Amino acid sequence: MDIREILIRYKEGSLDRGSASQLLGALTVGECGTVPSPEAPEALEAPVAVEERVSGGPADTDADGVAVVGMAERYPRAADLDAFWQNVSEGRDTSAEGPADRPGAPLLGSGERGHFLDAVDEFDPEFFGLTEDEGRLMDPQERLFLETAWEALEDAGCTGPRLDTLTGTGGRPRAVGVFVGAASADYALLAAESWTRGGRRTPRSGHWGLAGRLSAQLRLSGPAQAVDTSWSSGLVAVHHAVQALRRGECAAAVAGAVELLLHPSRARAGAGEGVGAVVLKPLRRALADGDRVYAVIRATSAGESVPTVAPARFGLRETRGSTVGRIGDAGAATGIAALTSAVLQLRHGVLAPAGDGRGARPWQGPRHAVVAFTEDESAGAGGVGGLGAHLVVEEFVPRESRAAVEALLAPAPRDTAENAVERDEHVLLSAPTPRHLTASAQRLADRLDGAEPAAVNLPALARALRGVRSVHPCRVALRVRDVPQLVASLRRFVADDDAFMDLRDGRGDPLGLSALPETADYLAALWRSGHVERLTGLWLSGVEIDWFALEGGPSGGRRHAPTPLPPSVFLRRPLWLEPDEAIPVSRERRG
Image (cartoon, rainbow, N blue to C red; front, side, top):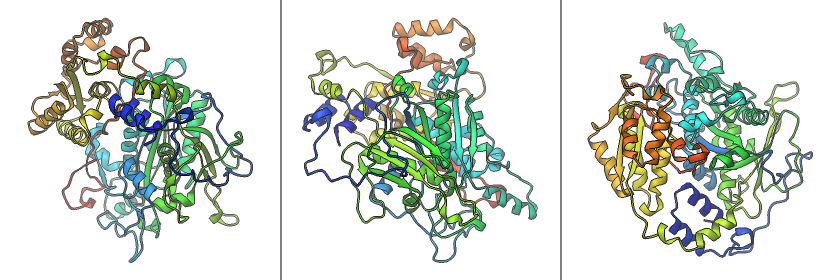
């Protein structure tokens, strides 16, 4: 773990002051807060240009930077980012035989292998307020992207009240754009075949629902656009999102892509599947909001043009070929997988195996990467291939690294060390249904059980759960003093989950306080006076409370220290066009 990672974890709340100080004290701090390698640094590869026309590198400004502030994905044998990073960093083979339990199987012939996702027929419509019939008629690609985009927004802290602070031109709230790459429509083919057998369920046609569904679900006011440029669709979606941010069309954007292989007509050995989404903000806005920044996008292009940037050295070049080697030929999702891989290598400071016989190795020196998908040469003369696309990405280095190191190594003030007075924290959880609420409590307890209590900042955790998560009708509040007590309270709730408020009948906020203009001042007065118990009771009764506005002071609650939280629980079950075409086994999975 280097200084940069220690500082990031300290800011996120996953390392307390003492642990971070101890780790930093064990390192020899070099110039500009870097840690010299114990061995001679490995020579970088020769500089890599995006093309001959690009000699690329980032300018040392925030003006043109676009920050990646949230990420989520599902790729073959990787249900989350941690699992995907393990696959990438270790060069794992993710291929397998065609899934035998998928509707429409078999997809591959005997002895053929591909790269597939698990349980693509499953969905949790209740989480998004949808009926079972609506879920059946949604393309599984749309369902999968909806879940993944939600997780990315949660990762960015943008599903709760902070979503309303993302205002656009004229003060439009929730000015978030959605740009999604997709290039297949296998579900429509399956519906056509079902029609010939007497089935009469027809999913919506076209890819517009991929972007439109998320935009409508969250009442977003930014542009919503689907992109189909074959295997570069994900990168072109990111390009459009970056341009929209720079033109001021939105304050933030969700960009990504999805690809599922559902019909045998497209089956082929080496095929891949995947879904990925990133949340983007202008770097200046991200820094002002106190967001966690995974990486910074400096330049993008689509088509024959290539981004023009100042001379620099690229230590990493992610291409279509390197990505296919990791997740198979994943069509529209290939580009977003390449960007995800680049961002993770930048963040971890490790160059992953790329099929050249070398294993993972430390990334020495400044970290700059290019994701370069050239025109599809396999299309042949007169053929139609995918559009070329390029992204220039760099690591994010907090400016305050030197000051942060010195502050952490300095003795803690007496009133914030062992003599600090403990106080109770109110941990709030909410979910769409009682079963979702129980599952959420179980997931949080399991996450905390796997962490050292000293490494969990309880006040930061409670503050994040209050302020960055969306609020649902089923609610519970736990009053605790430390992490072990929180885990015990969560376990008790899971075992006997009758002590919660269920506002699904619409009887929340019986006095209509949320609609009164005086309520905001009343809530603020309660907070200033320390009546958190009273505020918690009002929240349980259904009163709308913007916790970050209360806790953020003059900043209006915009700036916050990111705290890692487990994603919401999806209670997925098989849903297909016709009920009798789903997998003939009753099952439900938490994801």
